[in-house]
Image (cartoon, rainbow, N blue to C red):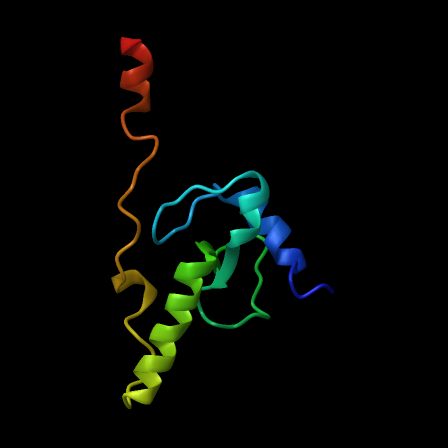
Length: 104
């Protein structure tokens, strides 16, 4: 297995839009390599085929996510806030798409 392109990455790219789940930047073409798969539970062996343990993060947000975990451990805490409590991206690229198409 090539560690820079694990098999679950190909599956995640088929399941999810090519948008970072944190900063909402879009990726395509040569920049697609900057989009990584983050395991929500931290277990790289937990790769359900439905992608429920994955989210796509750009390399910068992915690094930040792991740094937050390390910072929390160093401060004497455990893990940072659980996934459900963390804010998700607020950018909605397809918001009001139906209306925009009707009006054009």
